[in-house]
Amino acid sequence: QKEVEQDPGPLSVPEGAIVSLNCTYSNSAFQYFMWYRQYSRKGPDLLMYTYSSGNKEDGRFTAQVDKSSKYISLFIRDSQPSDSATYLCAMSAVTGGGNKLTFGTGTQLKVEL
Amino acid sequence: SQTIHQWPATLVQPVGSPLSLECTVEGTSNPNLYWYRQAAGRGLQLLFYSVGIGQISSEVPQNLSASRPQDRQFILSSKKLLLSDSGFYLCALEARAGNTIYFGEGSWLTVV
Image 1: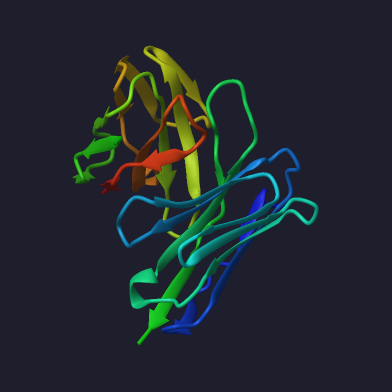
Image 2 (image 1 turned 90 degrees about the horizontal axis):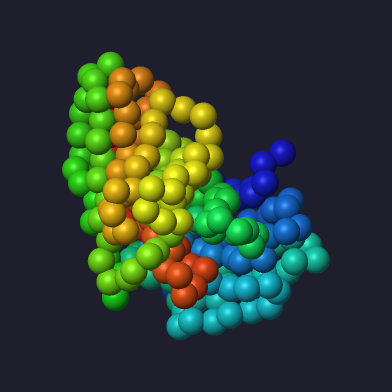
């Protein structure tokens, strides 16, 4: 079993839809949770960063962490064609030498006009 | 703000040839630096990380090596490339003040 599971998609939605992207994980030591957006042939850009459980909102994006269920989500409201990208979840435990992220494989999202 | 420069952006190398990918960062001092590889359809795999000059930790056994000759420079190398070394190589930094990791634009390597 992988430490982080993420549905690869592709996920296709109409413009304006609410998008829900999810990851599950098995390592209970994970405390830091991140979502990255990666456009084709580009490096990932950090979208959201959360620590421990709860919700965090930033504009059209909401990140949700449920540590009891080992489940994290990213919601995108009023989705736009420019949101079409691959979304990667990532997480880490506190370590003494470097913050080593464990990534999901990414969900490909396409927002259609 | 922090900036990560990677080069070359794209390269095609024959099997058995050497490799050198360079990463330099700006806008921060004494960062943690990372090399990740992303193979097609797979997540990012951590290859090396460095918490300071000359300090390298390897995460997976492989045909690659890394060096950090200066605080803001991180180099990924190989003496003899294998076909399986093909992929998208990403340099990343973590500023000392936080736990967030930022990525460069990456280097696409095709070994033929």
